[in-house]
Length: 79
Length: 348
Image 1 (tube, each protein chain N blue to C red):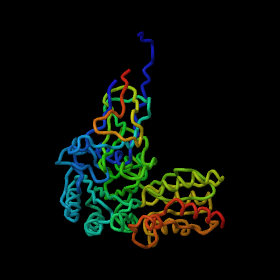
Image 2: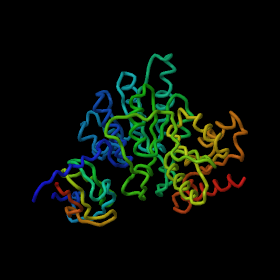
Image 3: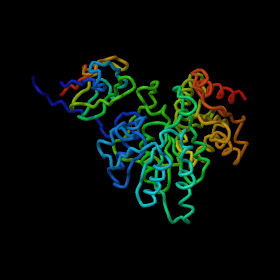
Image 4: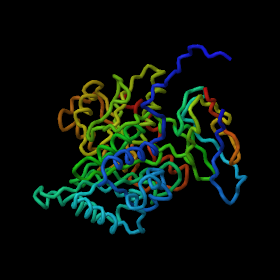
């Protein structure tokens, strides 16, 4: 199991909160390393989230859910 | 734990879901990998990734000699692109907003669009100019215009305006490979930007490999038999929303996404109107002297009797796009106005 963490977008505010704006892959779908799986946003800056491993994607924070930078927003269950 | 013969469900790869912005960037990257003569230049296209995300990640892969941040001097960098193109490169040059094409229009329509003619066909200008267009997010009169009708009015350049991720990538690749100048207009509202109102039609499945969407070919994105809605770009999304809503009342709306304005797919318009006998044109550009009139004339030039009711146009009235939210929403061709027009043309 590999965690997907909210990427650090604000260096000045390491504990800044952001929003998970989109999951491109449904919960339970297979993903491959490096595949674009989601998108997050802090203020008006957004960033892509790639799969850190091959496996099955599990969404932990749903779309529009709030999370702090570095917080786990999903994971990849490695089969 | 025993491992049984569990087949590894190898997902049919080959497509990925992504936003239109990502699909644009992928189309550019695909061609840059294939063809070293392709470069991208403009304001904030490098480290920033384009203010609407069209060049996200490209600087990392291709470096600053091919993803080139320019000063705010549109005349100079459009001219730079033209020079590079006539010497054999395939530059993509970004004018951040269609609203500001005015500051460099001489380069665009007196040079880029005319050199091929002026040289008796001996010199080609294989160049793409990209521009962001459209309103709906309170960016007021200087950042909300479409102006694709103005571009399409000036001869010598193709004009493409994708509405979804698949077309965005395929039209970008076609535009880069085209041997003449192509203006590639993307509406900010179709890009799938996280800071704009969520739009699920801005996300879709896109093949991983390079593919082309032909320039000058419309798409029938929803088939119907009672009325034809001809439109482009962000308004395609509204038209589809309206068509879905009216389907509950057994009204069958055909939606045509023109995808290109130049060349205009007139046969597609005629074929659909010949079938339905009713036409509504939706355009987020100014109404007069633009796309909406051209689409109606496409029908009446050939056979006015194809229309069983007068054609209707739903476009921006001939006034700047207001900043005030309520005024802006009244000016733009939003779903309520489209639906009212469809009902009216059906009642006639």
